[in-house]
Length: 615
Ligand code: G6P
Image (cartoon, rainbow, N blue to C red):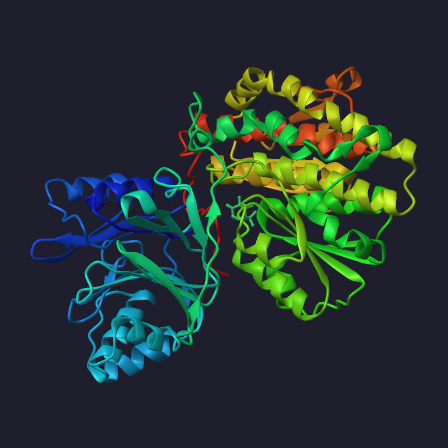
């Protein structure tokens, strides 16, 4: 979703902004723009489509060093993705330029009031309202500083916003505002330069020193330094954090796409999630991030797990794990629904929030609601220092490294692994025996190795993808632990190949979807040798009897499956609870190869955003 970059320092800004926007491309966008000083004034260049369109439009334009500059990738919400609606936006006088991530919920009322006061609007965006609001404030109180006028204006806004503002009268300054949408300040003290961005990725190539802004913060930044205030004009003190991951990690590492890189690095990611957290000889998991709430966890009677998208399917697998091994009742709910119900929560309920980015607006809203109602809030988050990581009472980082592909692969398996660790911890606090704990720990330790074996079959999966390249409908089915995996496999297929794919329970399939089955409607069946194998097998017979082609994900050694399926991809044997960590891999590969063979932009599928920071 929208990406923001800003720079102030002694260098020429265009290249810095464009590089920064490239680093944010993975968030998803449909237009891009920049504003910078170019003699004699501030110049804005905006283009619909890919960043390269903007780069071409910038050819030959001189940018002035030493002044503030801002850039933006826009993921359209209010108004079509065209040049005019692209950010930065400006006011009637051309004195204020700003970029915005989020939604101004009261923009209609504000716009009407401003129009009555004579302001002329050129775009359909909610963002433009903010620039006219600041203009009006300056007009009515000409003696106020820009800082004060901006603060007065933002106090009139409702909704979520991260803003980066330039004002002509104070050319070196960037005004950065955060309210429910992420913003980070990078400090390059040696070079007296500052970079502001939606996340640390564009900053990491310039400096490792960053300040994570909080909701309700405004930063006023110039090459001479910075100050932080809250929306009531009070000064704030901020801690400087360090970026502790390597920029190389965010590069493609020899793969054709980030998607492939992120699928193939999953065994290493699982090792990272487990590092130092598994005590096999005691059948225990040690989660440093949960130490402060460890005793409290003993008294928790019920868990709710909430998330969005792929993280939501990880949550569903977690439900099976927690109930079977953790010995606690669990409910899973999409964060977008949770926030608008009246969830019944109390101090004996713990709510777990799963999120790759830690910035998903619905998940953050669900978190705040849970805290308000007195529940213990816990995180499973990838991005260090993100809002969810900071706002939960305690939590576990997934250490998957930066995930660039918009469709989530490695973050998912990292989330599943973290859930196994949670389940072990809860189980050992309750009824799980040490023997069972040891068994899980031993099997879990082997997962990276087993995953590598599955990944070796990538070429075979590609051949199957080639065979089904022209099919536009797929049914994905599974049961028990692999029921949510059917949904996640189907989601991957939709996201990166744009084929219609429907996830379903193998058992429920006969209550509806079976009507669609014929020789042109393939089924992807997840059928490991587990406690529901026989039932699952009967469900597949029902498809076979109706001439539906079947691609099976089955356990090595299962010869019977070959008789009722067209294609089989085998996974090694493991504990039933851990099978999702292996079965998902061929489904990720199938979606990836299908997307590439269909000529899709697999790393950045159309219409999708990596970090969904609006409702
Ligand atoms: C977007 C992404 C998905 C992701 C979901 C939740 O839709 O495209 O890949 O699963 O948001 O994001 P989160 O960062 O909270 O895991």
